[in-house]
Image (cartoon, rainbow over the protein chains, first blue to last red):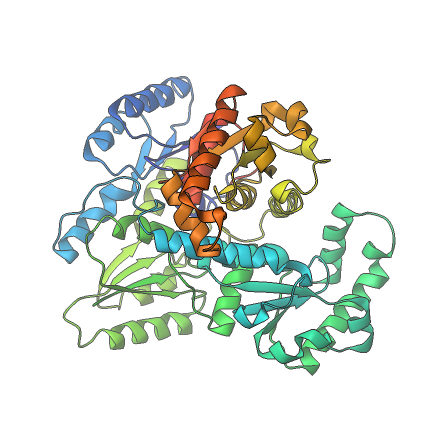
Length: 272
Length: 272
């Protein structure tokens, strides 16, 4: 078993994201992943070095370390680790300083910090919007929505709305298609005036069955026949009403969200 | 104005996260940021090159490009961009291949893809848990909670619960302190048997006032006096009951979540 460490003076999200992108490129699954966040002093850096070196001293595999430490003194300490150190700042900050003709500030807490209060508020407001417009509860705020996701139960609407809100600040509502809508192949009356904001999610029946079974294993809710019918009717509704839709079967929440941005051209409200 | 591009064969989340960490290290705010996601064919790569080169041909500043393209042929095409190309795979995949003694698979869609269905389900279930245990609505599932956040209204409980769920798969409930709890300096009766799971959020009164004013500007809800009182009483409750708590004033949702993990030692349910 090989250790992978994510070292950060902050939460470790950047180191983890980068590291994950890279290690998923290997057919190698026997990794023990450890995040060491908030390493913001020399003492903590030394502690991390001791821990990693002792944890690996008898291993035949060297540990791999993804580091996003910003401060020079901490990065120097961390070089004492006996392992493969992939230091993001070491590699990229030099070329950036040269290109921007400016020294970097080398301050911690800037990337995911509260440096931008406005963005924080935008994110919270978008999240609140998603929460209060989840599952067709209230429709009176749909004029504020950037997008209204629709589809059958468990097609991924709610988590996608939340992700769109938290990652991009997008105001996303969602509205489930009921059995009456499905039967009549119509969009719900209350959505008619917001047709331009509708976006459909569909999913392969077999995958949907698997998801629904996790929640409620009995009854027609997760029966093959019922599910195939619902999915078929939902797609008919989308096509009949020229509603763009995507198949979420093979997609993660990030991918569904990314594809929605791409297909609709909706602008995010902030970048983080 | 200088352009920054995030090139990805997937959503662009990794390129954006890394790029953001780096560029926030510069006192330079005149960036125009553009994400070009889903570059998964030679045609799309060529299109990106054309777009970037033409968008910048008359600029005095070279564009900066953060790329997470995985496939060799696409990465070669992208090198035709006239700008500073920071190619994450170029830099790190070589040392990793050497250390792991294995060629990387160079397949797209692994990092944020559906490669792990179990993780997808864990994430969805944790998100559903946060939603159905938001704001003290239902408390019958608290035995399943990993953590129960508590604090005054708008101290950051809900977004933190959602982030803990989506990023780490943690089952996080939240419960607001009511005016009666605050007055009596007690934890709500219904929480008594879950005291070990409680974690408090506090916030500087001035910051809370700012947040509340964005929502409802009138009344005692956002009055200085009322807010100072609530925060003071909440902190008294935490201290009296030995409930760990953190001050969220200067923290982003990522940071609050990260610190909660660190302070409580709660294990995440998955890594992504």
